[in-house]
Image 1 (tube, helix red, strand yellow):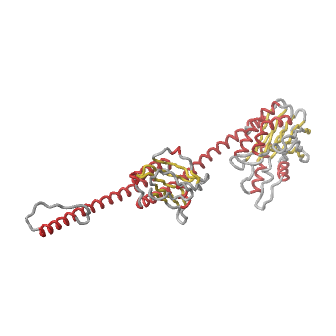
Image 2: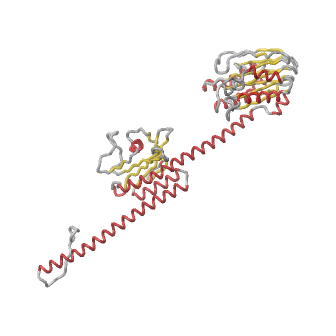
Image 3: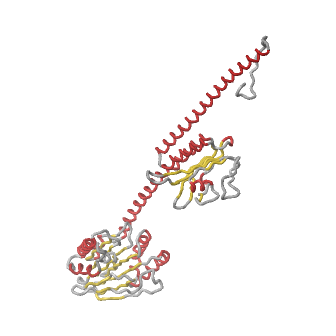
Length: 467
């Protein structure tokens, strides 16, 4: 039969001469061949249409999957299952680029346990997926060809099976496409190589997945920001809760205090500690930096200070004990803390204090010039072996004012870059000295804000005490 090598048509007995029988046989063979050819072509067209329908249905299914979820792991599991079934692959994996770690991580797979696969560094010369990611081009392998991996002489052990690895690309309008992951398909059923049609189909799917990966990343980042914002707000509220309550301030005497963190978490802190009788302890501190670390250190210091102060015989003893609590943490973090702790005894007329490198500590007599309360030790964390000494100055009941603040107030700058300064702050306090301490604190903060005209760049804390 024409066009069907090795296929014959045999006719039954015929009384015609040999030439006639031969002519009739050839005519019959041609007719049967035409019929078989038509059937074969119809079958091929049907198979082609079925394949195209399967591919179109796959693209639609994946679009539907990606449109319904932002969970990349969940979507990835369905994608690798659908793709591997259509192209006939026993195993498949979806890898996503972790930019921070510089690796490709498997987020979904079929034919193996995802947890068993370690991340692949993007610069791994022995990884097909890493090479596809770096070169932004697909690699397919037919078992009859050598392994296309010149970086490793031994190649990769794919057990003689075919594989197809396609980069997942993403780029917005006007932006160059960049790789964000890789789709891998291996061990095709029948051990046939992946076709050009398979490669084209998987590339189209990879383009869809690229947008999904980017969306999932953005959603994860937004959730992380929301979670961090919530945690920072909670930490901020907890940190403020560690400071003395208005009720305690009222019990201590004529006290005004305010702590204004520049960020959600601050490194400034203060405390007022009733010591019984006519004595009250006043503590103020400033951690050298801002953020979570200083905030944790502040929480530790202020929590321990009250207990240690009540058990200490002198202010220097209290600070020595506090240094024992936070000294190791200061050594590990390379932070330092300035601290002032004073004890006012209005009956004895004394102010005893220890000052670990905190320069913004002043005694304002009722009718005199502000007197700086000198440092009696370096800041905590700068000279851990240095002994903390104490000092004592007279205190006039109901007239003297203890003024403690942190450097965020005098170092506030205006638009011209000029600092507010200690002198201006003390002038405001002296100008309002006859008013209750809380009102003086309000006046100082209003003046600083009017001077700087901008948000605080450092924590601002002010404590005023008269008794």
